[in-house]
Each structure stands twice: as C-alpha cells, then as structure tokens.
Amino acid sequence: MPQEPQVLSKEDLSNDQAKWVSLKKLTWKDQEGKERTWEMAERTTRSKGGIDAVAILALLESEKQDFKTSTVIIEQYRPPIGKYVVELPAGVLG
Image (cartoon, rainbow, N blue to C red; front, side, top):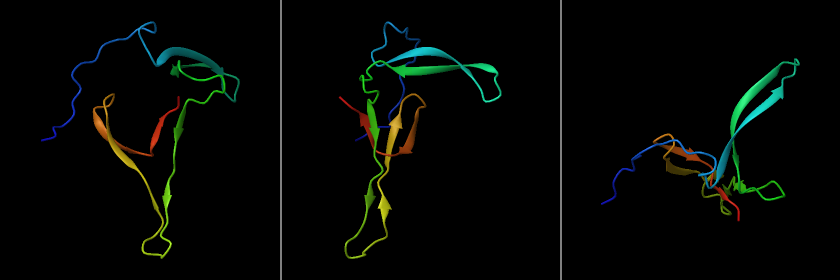
C-alpha cells in the first residue's frame, strides 16, 4: 500500500557539496538606478548553450470533437515545500 511521502531531514549544504546548484548573490540596478541584491540558486549543469531544462505545454485535441481542447498537467510531491504541487511536465536535459 502506498504511503504519504515525507521529508525525513533538512540540513545546510555548502556549494562544494552540491551536485546540481550553487548559491549566488546577484547585484543589480533597478529601473530607477538603485543598486539592489538578490539571492539566487544557479544550476551547475547548464551547457554552454545556456539551456539545461525544458517545460512542455501539451494540448490534447479530439479529431472528432469528443472533448474540448485540454492541457496536460502533473501533480507531484515536492520535498522542498513538503507538499504536492500542480505543474507543467518538465525535466532536466542531458
């Protein structure tokens, strides 16, 4: 019998231990000229082309008009927030 997924632990991870992302502090200037900072995560697996993931908006249409045009969405558990989310099908390239 399937069970509910659950987060078992959470701990800090340094950039040298991370396999997929590194943390960065971005400094930028807004449209009024004010300098600001932003904390962000950056994928370390990105190719030289700059693309490393894809999201798909799939539309289903009935040739016989049996149903209205529909979209495909996925419901899956996301451990970082400990909840199920509804999202477009997506994945990492490579």
